Length: 255
Ligand code: HPA
Image (cartoon, rainbow, N blue to C red; front, top):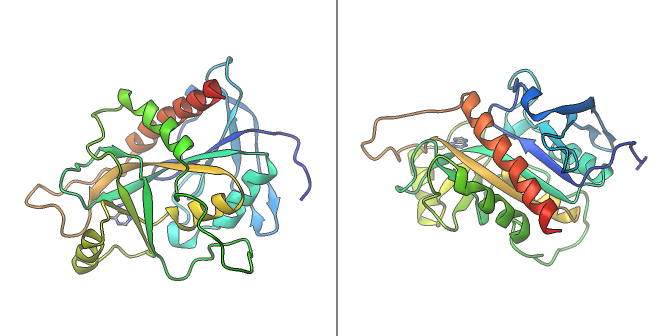
């Protein structure tokens, strides 16, 4: 692993609508960095320093830069997490669009998942660990998750669920209504396609990882008589990036 010139402690991995986001309000520093990892190139990582009193934070868009180039099923998760490790990152915050399974959730709500059910089937979830691994704590790191929760009071409305569970599906197709009903009975509150293996690889790399979910739609069959709504537009990124930068600042102050 060759040491890159920059070193940062926090990386924000952007999901829905991160592509094409105008980063100028968050004061980019220098040119984007691409790390050459054993798994291929990382996405370009831009350093952002909105507040000169806090160190720069890395930002990358996991689905590509100027457009949605790769959906979750086709991402190079290992290059992202390995690249973060090369930069010395100790915390990753990510955001991702989720479908609402729990009836209390509405489109536009924000959730910080407390646990994860993995229903993916084809993804590589390790850097090559040859043996059984003891579970090393919850999928989402409590310290990083608390930093996200502390950034949420300023969000559009209080998060309706205290400890939501996220189910990760394989994609790229959306789920059937029967699948969503299975996940609901298993205890899932929101559904997405991105957090496995990202969270598990970060854990293996010794990086604290937590995620912010933006409810973009009702999961299949879960509109429950409400008019169908979808929000995959720029507002997702414009809401999530500042909250995660705030979470990074919370963490910076508390360390
Ligand atoms: N299903 C899976 N992934 C998603 C959804 C969904 O309904 N919404 C946003 N990401």
